Length: 151
Image 1 (cartoon, rainbow, N blue to C red):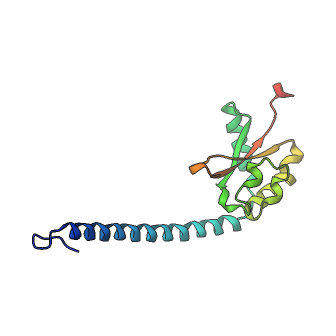
Image 2 (cartoon, rainbow, N blue to C red):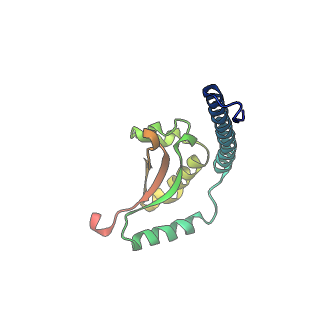
Image 3 (cartoon, helix red, strand yellow):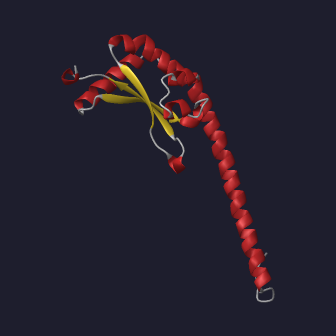
């Protein structure tokens, strides 16, 4: 509705405000729908990934850089908790079998850890990294090792 000198009234103002609000809500719904489509595509791509053959070299580089910075753990994987079958509840609740709740790429990454890194003395820890709106946000997998002082 267009407000002119001839149509100016409180009802016309309310109608104009309602139409603007409806227009903004429609834009927001369209934005959220397109964002969801893109996130779904990203999730599908992430879930279908395989651990790459050069993973060990990349992890070695990351560990060396982390040690050079004085840290004893490296963040090796980060993804939304919504992408887990239980939305990260097992990790949040410190379930000792949290890894049993994994699927897709996080499962393959954990299996890679068990097969390649655990026998070399590394540990893995999963943690919820942030809590937007009080809900679990992103999950982080940390590769850990002990320094000589810790032994």
